Length: 76
Image (cartoon, rainbow, N blue to C red; front, top):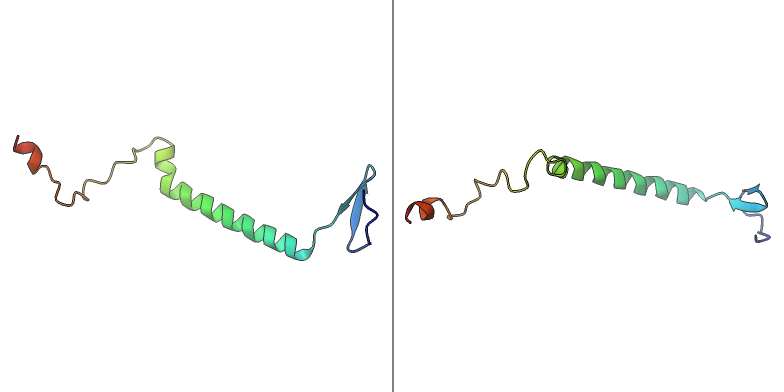
């Protein structure tokens, strides 16, 4: 697989040369991995109880009635 120009190092395994990644690839990959895990943990904190079935998504919204109170129910 490719004669290569000898830039950087490479490891040959069973006749296949695997080139070592450049430093910026490694740093960028680790940075994006960190962003991914922060996002996953943030969403788990926000949505975890709903996903695990500990509460319903509509619970806790009683105080946001915006004038659509229970007065309408009592007038019928």
